[in-house]
Length: 618
Image 1 (spheres, rainbow, N blue to C red):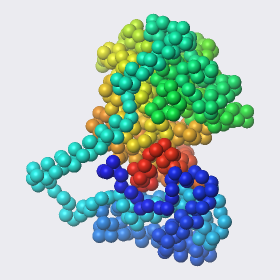
Image 2 (image 1 turned 90 degrees about the vertical axis):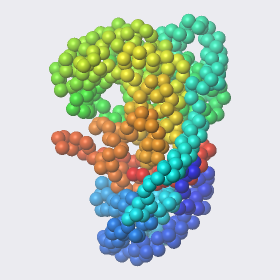
Image 3 (image 1 turned 180 degrees about the vertical axis):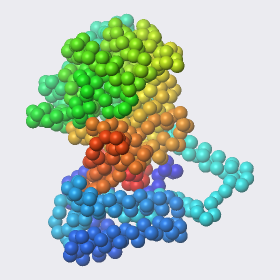
Image 4 (image 1 turned 135 degrees about the vertical axis):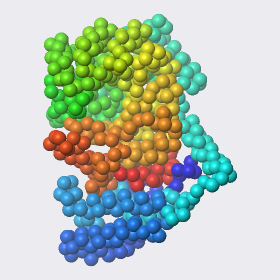
């Protein structure tokens, strides 16, 4: 994609080999020498080190010289490089600051001094490349801007001829976007629909089901598939997938797939098109092993610290006007990276429905807290609750005059769309009272491959009754290729679902295989999402902070990079949004090393050059 594939200044790294231990040893000294060669003045500052504070002072003077240059429009040849330079200088000042060393327990300065003096120290290629890219950005040498626009004499559109030239350029950009989004096949594609009909027939034959059974959501719930041998009669599993499922089931980790969702998976295990679908429910082997070990060691897996924000059982409150209500503690199937899978015992576990006494106490709490105007009914998945219980819970909430909005957080439109029956849709619609109370559905599509005629039908049953449907996506390795999320948003809008949030994947260590750098999500929002029509991109990029809640990544003042670890990972400091009225401490987050992400993209067949501007998003 010509308009976005602008190389940052290149390095010697071969990203196809960067994960090889042998290659890392071979490439490290060459990359370090390249860094010193590109920054001779900085090299002298650290190689002549005698006293660390004196060295720090000299480095800050060096950075201040470059910061002053950014105020001179004649030094940086274009506005793009100037803007990047200012951001990179800010990050460099942070990571060399003594405060950052104190709060993180790491020191980039000490590492660079030792490296300059040729002392042995265990750091990664990712660490050197991160620092190298920051200095490239500081000096305005990224190569990301393809033309110069003078700040004193900006270009002006003065005629229809200029307008036509601009229109031709925009045509080329649009064609590039369509070319890229077409790489991600939707479940609405005729060939995919046909293939999945064949999958459905094969599954019904194996399970001895009729078409009437298939359209009955209760039948799917009774036939949740957990046995890897049964799964292998329907699709092929890799050896590692089979072992992971066996170990998960035998060790009591919640696992199960609805027959419908299994029909969305391709027979062959290459994951070329169904990678995001398989990744939702088939856990990586290292995830299974890490969770088992954590449980054996008695670690608390409540990553988001929900126990610390639960006033009463079944209620979580992080915000002034909205609270979470969790009446049903399981789902039709469990997303591997779910933030609440620590408290779910099994798929559709019998004990998942909250006891009447706890339900009563929680609903009483909502009634007695009139500052709460919005309730998110989630879980687990409340979409699996019976019609009778749904009526009972919503009926009680609807009697509370201060509750102006009820949200139903459910993934059934994606994993069990036949659950949205006419009767169920009628029940939800009956609690919409225009001008007084809104009821809406929050769902969770991850990829255009999940968008199917069945899910479209389920959504339309809600939409025709005036119930809006919003989507919350988790940004992972499975949907983070260039314009993959754009493709999803377009598919969602086509079936009547509004994009709402894109969550950065939680920083849980056991879900390491799913996580991408924060910089990639910001890059997606800036370079991809904004090129599409507004209604296709009306979602918000969010980082969810344990115990505190959402931090909006576009609000740059809410977070900043304060350190780079020896493995190349950035440390972000997130500042609490409630600092003006609550005693909440900032939160430190260890991110995914950018070089690791680029290497994985390369392994998946992507051209890393398309992602090189990622280094300059913070």
